[in-house]
Image 1 (cartoon, one colour):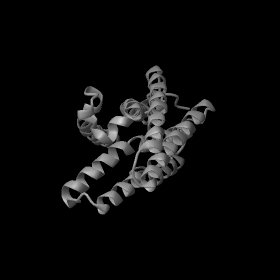
Image 2 (cartoon, rainbow, N blue to C red; image 1 turned 180 degrees about the horizontal axis):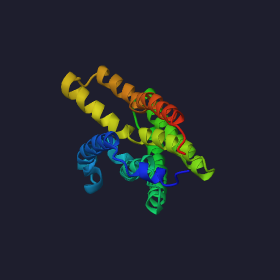
Image 3 (cartoon, rainbow, N blue to C red; image 1 turned 120 degrees about the horizontal axis):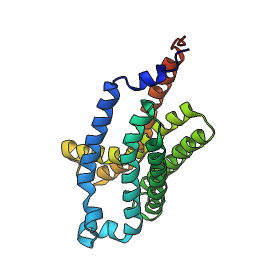
Length: 222
């Protein structure tokens, strides 16, 4: 049996994966530029009357989410390319801590944010999906199910990135469709509160299953 084959495969170029991660990093950078003022200027002028009373939930939500999104990018690269070492374990703990902190803030916002009930429900279920997918990823690695751990981490990061997905979709809809401040705009926000995580999860699942099926067809290395 060739014991060095996995290590060799880990060093092969992964241009497709790099392209996806680069696109995600660019979207994350755009999001950070748009929302950095919430962390650099903690004042009523920065937050507005709408968010200022809820800064106790928004700040940990942003801090935890930012930690999870940034460490998650590196984790995906390390995990899918087989570079599992001390750095991977350390970043995994940071990612889980970010999800915990961010979800606590998210639940607070979902329960206190004014507006239509379906909008708050969408944010609440986003946090539920965030905790469940990350919890399954942690349980899988704890019980030695490494491949299932990778799959659940992909699902978890898909939900983590929903915060960026929401802002990107909202920005382009309002820029190109030019939605007015009316009931239509409110309905779009309600739709995005659900679609920003449910649709990416729906699209990610076939890719995860295709990856599993392709791995199942690989011939054994003698």
